Length: 334
Image (cartoon, rainbow, N blue to C red):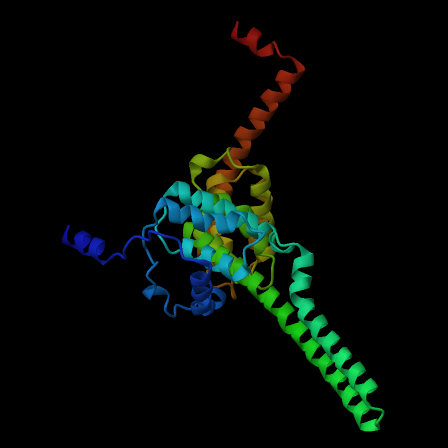
């Protein structure tokens, strides 16, 4: 009881108001290293860690994720990260998770920001600089007929073009980097929530070369949340994605392979038998660091899946018979 009291007293004060856009930009700048690389830095010292949110503050932060068009990427990344730090109810976590999954699905199309706005942000300053350089060169060339004046004008046009192209590259790189930071912040928050509803998008982001490590960490946290009671209530497409990932990731991700096999043990159907059988054929006992654990998990999972397959095939046979002769069951019971 004393420990609970001390823990309660050590909690930060509740957040009455959501941080402003300026404060979120500062938060993003202070924790960029954590967002990109997962290093601790000053994250544990932030006043938002394990803090309670008022309902108004929560609504304001979620609105930054759900109404995405006019929100800067730095603000969005900070909001996604912050919502993973504070204390939320299960219902609030599900709402935030849904918004983050939408963002991640749109990660390759600008996350709600039209391409014209992205191109404008990157290109307009460069075009303006190039135009100023051209005007300066034209005016200087008309003001003086001396060769030196024309040379100065040409040099001004050349350097303005060079600087403009460099500015275009830098600003476009900022767009790409900030979008990736939104993705990474969203994945880290989904990792903390570990909600099975986020599994489809985690499977999708695992295929991205710059986010697969964070996605794998989120999968390792989320897959154990699948329970046996969910067997038969999960979409077949999700089972198929689990099987595909199990086949594709062998043998380079031992912990993820084991987590997938154990998840299929709890919720897998007969369609998972062949992918699980293939796992062992891809694994070299001498080089696989957790071979014994994987072998035991595969044997246990196959036994359960085969038992389920018999039940599923029997139910399918009964269903086919019902469609052929709907009154057969009634006659049998009669």
